[in-house]
Image (tube, rainbow, N blue to C red):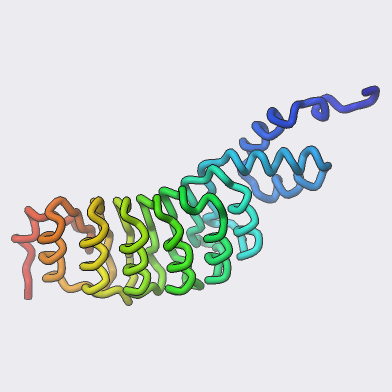
Length: 227
């Protein structure tokens, strides 16, 4: 067509491939508003992404859930809080849990999300049956979340519970007993007593536990002072 811009002649598939390379969600939103073809290209680019990270971005429940909903191929979801932080609540986790990709997620990071509780975590985790790696450190979860993880995530390999001061020995015992593929737990900053680790190693001798800057295993626990 006379006067048509060169980029407008690009096939939709190629346009989507270009948009996949854009990491700024603000830029994607602006591109989506250019025309119908670009909007469709942005949607297709999101559908191809296997990883999304909102860490350090000013995201809320609505914007995060909307982006995840279009990311049909998503495997790795990072909504960790950093300096600027994601303002995600339990409602946001619930809306994310309704996305088609959640059952295929292998990695989720909710690190430092102080605005979430067991309610939102349970709703999300209960649908993440393929999960292998979970970082939920720096939150206020309790054993209720650990019980849900134990029941819903049989493929879990690593979990970070850094400074989760409301989880207890009971929650960890259930988690390790049901998640038989679990390889590593980070409990630094929690209130878990040292003698609990012996019980965990009894259930899973190959388990590695990170606490207080140390990496404990079944071989080193015998050298740990128990009061």
